[in-house]
Image (tube, rainbow, N blue to C red):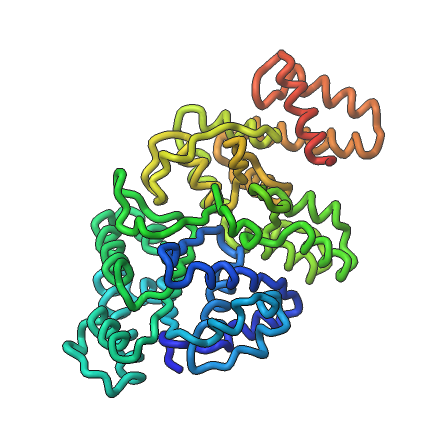
Length: 435
């Protein structure tokens, strides 16, 4: 086994042996179907801590040669699939975590050189007897190995989009990077499967993308891979039963991601943290800081502030996601900012209705934390008063409820003043929180 070529199955074994492991191996049934077909290019984008790296490690453990992973998988869901034995440990897997390479170089060209050097070392060490035309040419080496050994490669690229997140203004560097991936993967006979994970969908330049051969499965439309985005509701119910946690409270805190033809999807990291700690809390801030959220929601795009306020009130808003440029700097409209927040997990998206909304109480608290000190004091005050009204409702304190509704209607509407929308805003939020 090498570091990047067929890295083995130890990393996935750590996931299996963790106290909480939710079986998502049916993803392999999908990748088995698209192996060596026109659909063999798969790009999965999800927020941080939604299990992207674990899935990548799972695929490496299943497909990689020089490992015997049968015992790992045979008692999991994929073990019952007809394709299980056909592809088990049959391919050369090249596993690349782009975050690691970029963090060590902070320059795309240097990163490319380091990556090629590391991969060539593993390949040449493993395949010593191949007649190479040029041992310094990565693509040529891959072609020579495949031509002689007839074993295809599976490329697993984790954190593929780190360059767009960390080198936000480097448009030329972005193009260089995309061209490198295109040249490595597109129209290459040695590729059996390319599986990329990241937070952002593939970067677009006008109507053209250098990686237009990829099928994308994102937070706006994960398509047939929706059930693998996070934990499904039935999976969360099983965890609540196992750990003696209240399911309705779990749903209020962590539910909210909705996709077509699947159950509601929950944030995996947050659910695991709640189950293991036996407490409901905001675990999201362990993955992203509210300062990052604040940077986006205080942007001065027409209508953005009003939309955020309505979302905090429990509203759903129609948006257009198609103009988003799939980076973290190019914004033309408020909808572009909101689309980025969908991909970061701060907002959920109803694909059928084309509507965006705040998914749950955990994320709502992130929004409240983000807007404090950002000139939104009246909004923060309104949210706090809404919380007090909710508590009064739960406690059946009719006088406090009447006083809170009257105050909201005439003084502290976060939408409009002195009209029926003031009352609607508070009632909608109370109703949403109490469901």
